[in-house]
Amino acid sequence: MVTFLQQCLTGISLGGAYALIAIGYTLVYGILRLINFAHGDLFMMSGYFMIFAMAAMPWYLAIPVVLILTVALGTGIEKVAYKPLRNAPRMSVMISAIGVSYLLQNLATYLFTALPKGYPAIPFLKKIIRFGGLSASLVTFLTPILTLVIVYILILLIHHSKMGMAMRAVAKDYETAQLMGIKINQTISFTFAIGSLLAGIGSILYFTDRMTVFPYSGSLPGLKCFVAAVIGGIGSIPGAVVGGFILGLGE
Image (tube, rainbow, N blue to C red; front, side, top):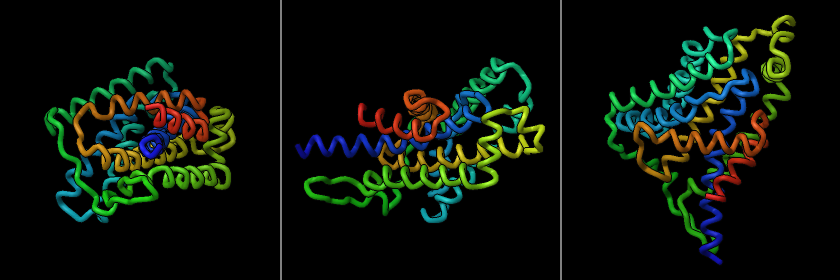
């Protein structure tokens, strides 16, 4: 029984990390009707950012620096790869997304080599916690709780802020929102920033447990998170969370 509960705890923790990344897919799809295939590779690049940040500074400075770099990369991708194709056919945008994914993978291979690199241990996250008969690192217990808190804050943001109202308006009717004076580009960039931030947080939680990063380490988790978003109904934030936890428990 203890073994079963231990495996469930691990699955719930993994599902929490998947849920955070799946929300990124869901947010972008809700606004642009675009599957951002580069999202998993952004998650991978965030892992590399942490490796080099931790080599230069303590963890409490490295974490915000990594999240800022991840958001900057995500919004930069939106401005360079997606913004010029705003009115292009969807197939063109999808090809661009796939191209960005391959670009990030090959850039990481060129800069960091294809060999796995050790992910730095964040001391307080690796602390072993014992609860009843269960034993796991703090990150395992923290991930699902942090995921639910972040999702709650995100839902409040979307339903009770001006930017959230703009996001919902753009998601409902892009052209009408534009005619009503909503700043479309600003809203889309904000959406990518949130998705990138969640990918960065998910990356820290995921790689802290797995401890290695390589150029293709975002491909499979990215695909799984896309599946999680689809399971929950892509475009639905609560659905993405449920899909992430289902996938984590199943795995």
